[in-house]
Image (cartoon, rainbow, N blue to C red; front, side, top):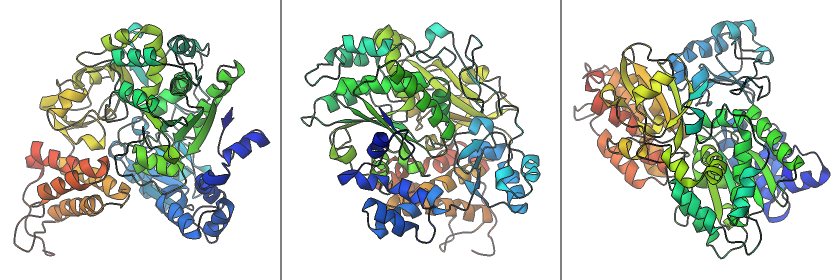
Length: 578
């Protein structure tokens, strides 16, 4: 059975979705949305409907951007990849035309830049002429992109998605792919059947040790950023004495430069649903929560359609799927912040330990996985863990790499884990201009110089130079880009998206952003030193003192840019406002 938080097809499902009793507060974001967001009377109405206090309702409404500013119907992504493609001009045109518009953080549309959010639907490749044609009416804004209204196709030329839009994909030969986004969807349940053979039956006394062994043999690491071994998580949840357990999908894809999960859901939702069902049965869970960012309206529809197909085949009996839409907060990609949001609270990270595998959703053991990670599971079981491991180079598996910026064909490419930048760019049609720098794993990975173009794009190799693979959101910058300008953009993002809970991150992200802006203006500190004199000290304090990964890595775009591109940080003449 599926429940879709207020959009259910039957009274019983709607009752399930509203989660009465001790979990009623989980409905708070939906109640606020129904009340119109952060408008007069909304907090009171939402509090009355959920049992939360009015202060709690106001706290949630003001925390999430899609609730906090409900009148802003047009949001233009001003992430690095979109700015390279003219997002600033699109935003200026929108404001000049009288549209209720604002800049926003990454929309997971870096491959179709500039991306624009129209209410809650992402439009690709929006141009200034598109904005002008809307004549100040947000409802009339349309993208003139040739992608609009075009079906995505699989390798055999079959239509695989609703007539909306998809990005470009590619990869190695099919036999060397763990996921294969161009393959036909499969609703036979073969992965579930294999999981049952390995002990994942969902029965109370079932022993899925053989399945965990297969995951360990595969070497599967989390594909969402941290690269943590998947089998350790599964075994940890299975080993908890508490019998109530949950499986949670993290589809809150918000890392600048990253869009692979969006494309994976659009093209292979079958793998996502089947992987979640396998995990639930292996761990004895009966409830699965799918947390998608609120801007993923079409990807959500794809998952719902895939879920219905499995249910028609009666392959998911005993399992309940819940869909939860995020309301606009990058921090909810952090696993414990996501859990807080699922519980109807502000998305602020929890202190760890305890970890979610011990104390997760509503205090119960919880397995949380990224979209790509869970989609690898059916294939691992069907073809064997050793086969998956063989698909990588030094590390296991094939990998979905996102690439945008100065390449001819931005998109999502599935290649052996450990390819070099040059190999990835060759798959994406080649460089545009002369390579100067690249970000190998989203904004969190900082910048590397062109001299690292032959370094393997994997967890270990990138860590050796102080970077990270992260979500594999690769952004390529040619020699027209000033790295101080690029660093300012990434620092602005982290300042905007800091949840504000801990002082090192809250203060540090603002300090670093303002320091670079003062440096550009030629301002100096009172002792005559440059505006950037203390950034290394601040970066250390953020790394050591922040609660979660955002604060721990937020300085990396600046420190790496300054390390590798010192000529882009010339000492400025002293400004008047010293």
